[in-house]
Length: 231
Image (cartoon, rainbow, N blue to C red; front, top):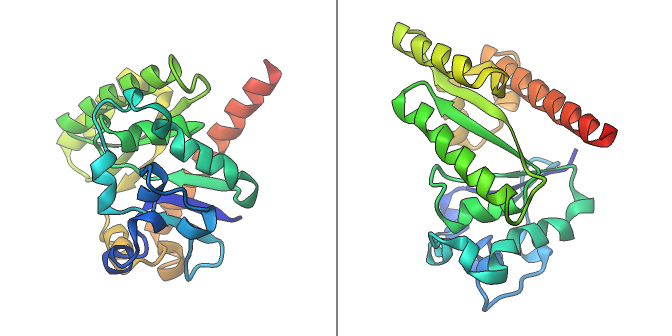
């Protein structure tokens, strides 16, 4: 299953900084460039994983009212359509800021939204920002986009987090994934070493949890697609 990840830092800071902005996702938004897919898509040491690296230069275009900048808000969507037949799945990483072009353009080009949530006051409030942004996208440039769900991330075993989790599930119900990602050192080690956890600790509980989440995501996507086809 060929997978494409956009806004990715997977190659690491040094390899990304050595690339010209036109050879990264920044080139898709910069009017001075019109890169071909082959110029911005990078292979990795993992056979089925390809990335479009992020770049600091993108900050020059990460405006706070992206809906007012014309065609550049559609740059990522047009790029994904151009490479659609080459990949089974495209994953778009974005930061927590929902006000800039990065988040806006990502949702313009997406079918589904999956949002991580921390079990604290800021995490629970972040859902409101995500919902507002998705509703704005739905009523303007991408009516087909849907929130697939929220998954609880970095969950620790204590009464405070249990309380926040119960509150999340009470308010948002089935929109919260059943699978919960624990606060485990294995995830951070995998990110730091830039090695998929399944290749590093294939039989660990952390990997099993990731597979559970992936299975739940797949089930939700299939269910929504079947509903749309039936309609």
